[in-house]
Length: 475
Image 1 (tube, rainbow, N blue to C red):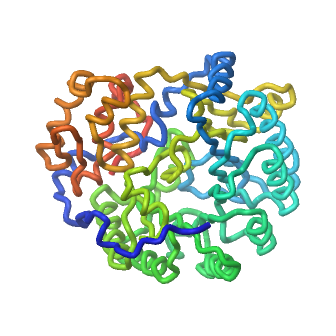
Image 2: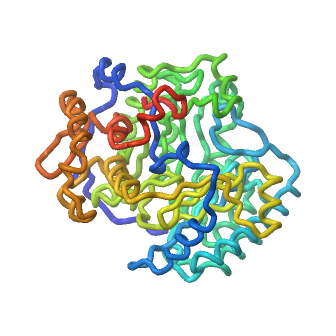
């Protein structure tokens, strides 16, 4: 996949090192809040599903002008072992034969979706996630990929990505994916310190990552992402710095440096990490601050809340153009697409609806066998939801909102519609986290680290959730 030429790194906005953020701000804003991969967020989804209403909206989306393109996500839940930090929906399995009926179910679910969504709409993004997508054998993967290509109209310049576990992926897997048109690979690194990896039940030698990275580059693929996590037991300023240093030496085009989401009330296995001791908000910010400084000095551009990219990467271009987007797959340069998710627990976002698939394999298979869409929970968005989603995405991704243009787009008086929210934002302005300009809300350099808190001001559902442990810590 081609990157966007961009030589002048000075064009990118500068941001302060998080190490310099006053401790009192960290203490004040260290609360629980959404990561806004959607709005409304998943806790708002309902089990009393209006199947016909969802189907009607999906069909109506085909006639939208301009026609929205499609993003396709395929969730493969199987993992050989459970990582104790994992917040994803996974199925622990070792028998590769379990992949065969699952692939057949994915194919059937695609056919069901194509009865509602015009398969001729352009597909501009495809992602395989998990779990471990390469748990599937090359033959199983090949069957799935072939069916995707014959069912949907994939654009020549589509981003086609996959999450890879360097410990288990084979060269045969990688060659198949490259020859099938995959052009971005996301490597699950997490950390390079062996003690940390042992404490979180994910032993992984650096050599495994080197093997995958070197093979992809020999085959001409440089669009490689590293997933790293901070906030894990055993992480210190010293060993985290070594992980970042090793990452810089390997020079992936993008880096996702995630704040570990500790939600043991949703993922009980995470309680195992509490025995090891978790870093507090202050240490986590120092670890992130050190990483920020090292990556900045190495030439990476800070993207959004927790991503970094080389200046020539198209994500950096999207940051400058203020066109970054965010969905259940994280930050993306592909905005305005309807997202269709296939597989257990997959969440679709299409035509003003959210639908989440059944999480357990047996009832998922049963629904597919009956020819029923495997939706377990859903949400039908109102116009107010659509407006607030657009607003939150702009602030969260691009740290700026042109309120005049936004009002014109949605045919509303911004000051009147959001008078209460603007008043509430004064606290953030007093703390130097935003600037309420004439016709714009601008998140300051320091404020970007508190963007979750800032966006929560516009979330009309949070007040009803006060005191409920639905979200991870914002810092």
